[in-house]
Image (cartoon, rainbow, N blue to C red; front, side, top):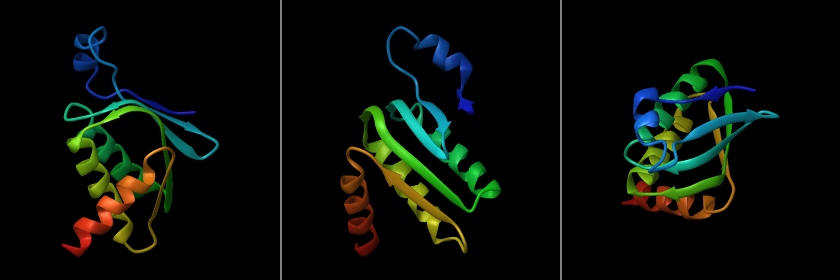
Length: 110
């Protein structure tokens, strides 16, 4: 299992006021938990980009996310665009994944 805590100082500052984003790898699936917002979305994008340098396929489960704001949705748009790279696949599953996929389709068409 791997864990990522991004911006340790910020996580410590917000420890009691907001939940941070945690990425935990379990059986090949990256489980997201916490909050995906302006503070944490760049960390997720950077981490997934790093993973795609090492792996051809990244599976993300979003069931553990308590909140996704518009910055979080934008982060998923960026992450999904990474799947356009040759031989790279990104799968998102969990509650709300259809909304993210539909938003991606809508933005791709527009």
